[in-house]
Length: 399
Image (cartoon, rainbow, N blue to C red; front, side, top):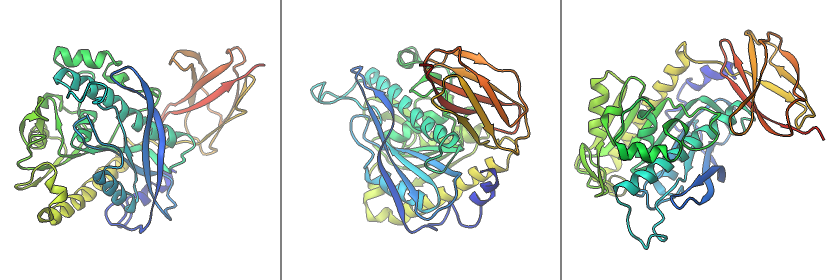
């Protein structure tokens, strides 16, 4: 896989529509969500891939729809068009659904600011779960031919608000009391969503008409961001103001200003005279819309190729663990070109550490885990250098 990295940045890939056909895998379950009524439901996404592409380490963009956190779905035309154009350029793109305010259950009463923060906290966890879905897939079966180290998050309107906070908000940021409470009640910023054993790191944000609650969230840890926004947007402020007539937030202009003042990577495209929805529906903005997307494709390729070229990029090792299910004796078969030591850890589904091995150097190793009770476990392989950690599921069955 590592040998294909240069091909990701080769020629017009990621910038021009080099693939004419796109395959859409619909209704892929990427996790289980919990709404504000404490009811669980399946989280679904549609996955877009280029037809005829033989690369297996493609970058990913996870997109979230708009709808003021009360409406919308993964079939939103902006999501369909954006994901289609991304796939034509060699990306794997996903349009996700996430937790919304249950209008019917509350007699079509809109959420107040506290309710809205509660919904955003849950929806943020859903976005994180979607990112972890691709991280897990890339490190395991790689069904969708993705590179787990090259994942971006994006969205429009409410979905862009989620993406912005994914790229900016971290555990060290200071929150107001009611915001902190809302996030703490659903696990805390670091533990939102599910599938926590996998990373939710992203390399960039694609923000279309979104905002962030507080620009103080923006610091050296924030992900590079490309923003596009209508200059007179009356739903999500271009600069600062009421968002959805419920609470204040900082729009794309303020986000860009703060990024630049911090010396961070940011680009802003302004639809002059544009509002919130007319930038997609009004013919007068058609040329601007095309320019905006083309600018993003060029910009995001630069972010991806910069990550690949940096010393921070880690290779992805291959591993075969068998038999699975197992009665206790587990064989590990790593690539013959492995050039670093590694250690094996075994966790239960609650994330509790049950076993830590000594340090190994051999590509092939056999471990006796028969002391573990029957059930599902997560095996994590940590490498000393050069490689990303790997996580696999195994089933213990001593019967």
